[in-house]
Image (cartoon, rainbow, N blue to C red; front, side, top):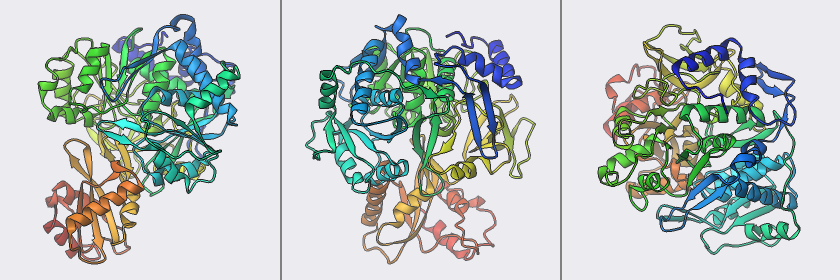
Length: 635
């Protein structure tokens, strides 16, 4: 596709057009895709309700754009390369032709099991090619997929299934992740006790773990494929979708305990994911692109599946973790497949940094052309290590800022085009109109300032609603500042107009690039038998970026504090998943509260960070002495 930005002038021209005439700009980009019917109107919007419609009246199917149209000239090109958790297990390559066949077959499995357009399907699978196939098969028949990360607990899955009223779950007997096997089907069985809406569970064989299979409900993936093959249901016509039909729901933590289902729709999301993938990474034909994320997160949706495949790219999926069987695994994969573009998280980079350079020195990384960073702002030390030791100071680093809600990258250098600066996401991509505002909502025009990051005009990949609760979407993103989408992030704009994200300004913690609501963790801690109340904040963590620090009031003194901490951690793991386990649990007599009963997390955050000299005014607290007690007993 020829909408690639190749120079700074190209970027400036594209950005200028995207602001002066957004509709003409996005229409020209959308023209590069395959439509069943073109749009009547490019954009209709207001941020008050909010209601955003892109390419109104258009008809399409995203899988035709991701697979079918590449069959003419890329049928035998690898679409997905898959590397297993165990380096001795043979890798798999699916060409575009093979991917098309497998997606059609599994789409027919779904139809054969009564799935219709608009039905919601929960997918809880390991990082195997069948996960991508399941996602694309849903999209092909117009079913709405809700992928849940394989590390979430039964309770977290049940909450998500109930919210979306899913009728089917697609899972596997188990999954491999590093040295651990995850019993996925057993977790699903525990979740489904609470989920009467689920009528069918399709189970892929992966680990050969013994599992229970309930007659009439549970079906083996392999048996279902054989059935449709026997019936001769080989091809599957793509469902004609409206531009604004729902494509998927992806749950993200909010500042309340209940996860919110971010909804993305077909046309705008496709155009934005493909456009940003092509430009940020400067993808060239035959490049091998490796994104290390899990498909359970938005990065996996947009930049393992939809963005790369819409551009006819070769995308590499990895089942394992960066440190198994040793800390050289990423570099082995780069060497083995001659990877050209590597997109990973600061958490992974910091973890590999700590392992030292012995794991890097014998690996051939000369194929690399572009490095990327995603999930959280990358610190300068990690940026420099990544640049010098992995990119050999020859590969531009694209430090990308975006969110589940934005659908795709919003602020980033364009590889080889934008001059980079460590810790800065640099400049907004075309179509992204940023504003910094102060606490009163006044727009800050000058450079060299910090403020709250807002976006004042819609872009095609943006959130449309939160599933089943549109008011929650309005309250979370569109009420804080009038006629603006509020990102929830603080941001610095320097003298060059470059943007640097400074972190969340709401009660959300960013752990290893994944947003976890403090209320969600507090609710889980409070379910432990001996807990009266808790408060959770983030604190700087040298590997994860932010760790979770919990202040907990018990109903009696613990005989064995260390054991109680482990019990509380286990409770959080059972209710949410291991990702939300607190690193530090401090037992306290009370929490700093205002006279109206609001917990002052600002003070707790400062104590957790070790910044006790800047607690601010504590005289308005109900009991200022509580703060001294917490300070004196800090872990």
